[in-house]
Image (cartoon, rainbow, N blue to C red; front, side, top):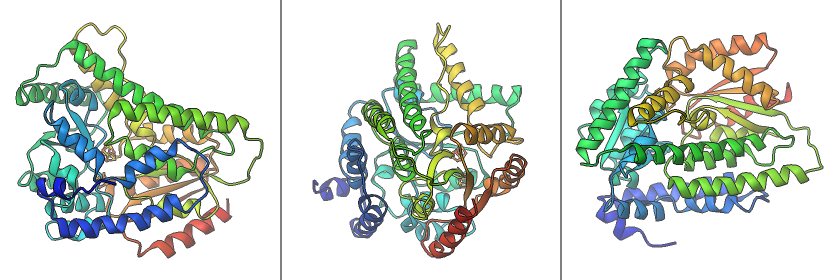
Length: 421
Ligand code: SF4
Ligand code: SF4
């Protein structure tokens, strides 16, 4: 692995604190990924990306800055297509490490979700090279915590905020269409790069291809036994938030092909219970819930969250698109109609979606995993519990942060849940 010290120094990283952060990752990585049997060769690419998480990709992004901007985001509502169309690269700022939480708590209240605290802490501690490399951060007014966090972060990094409707009504859709158009105008001006119909079309096709590849991979998990573990699929999906889009798509396609072949040649069945994980996003390196479920004897076969199906389901339509405006409208439509974030009220589409996924993936039970203080997802658990009960699908709700202090308690509850399925 290359020595990244010089590069990190040039980004203004606090090297001493960064060393502590990086030392924590290999242990966790070893436990979750390396210390288990693995027969999927194509996973080695994804393992190598995360093993070198602050190295090669950061170097690529620094080099990319000669050609176009590097832009950060915290939410899957920020349309990657528009960033690619101005020649930019979009990076999901992971904020999944407990290391950053105490830094965040120096600035914001403790009773906020770990994702927000870690996000602020990552910037404040100057230990995340992705945060250091971005030219702009695009925030979105989804939950209240994030809305207020942007005000604090905007003192540390240049930000552009997208407003979000609360309802998927016609007026909500109109507001979002305007927001998508305004983002496009803003980026064109800021980076002096007009977006043409062709450049936007190409970007839409690239992101659609990425979504289709992930969809193909997830389809293989419908097999029993599933050819790929839940924790490996989670890792693959998480990498999609910051890897180069085209290279990543190819790698996911290769992996999906290997999984298809493995599923076809698999003659042995297993009687492991099949689990759907739903709730708040699980960003790198938050592998805790999957790790507990899969070391308790069950398989996570699908995730209905933003680091799961919500990230890639449904492509942007290119049919009958003759002008840039048509594509922008189709982009707005895909994001607003098809992502069922708990920030919407009502959010009945999510209930239907979960039932459909349970049927398609032959799910035996639901683990509803909410991040602590993630109010919207915690409250919405009640609606999902009712709908699951009506359809005879057992569900357990767990609330956790990024620390390992509740690992024993989490394991006891999840093991008991799996045993009762
Ligand atoms: S849960 Fe909602 S706010 Fe959070 S990343 Fe997903 S869409 Fe965005
Ligand atoms: S995890 Fe929940 S509280 Fe945290 S940023 Fe996302 S929606 Fe907001």
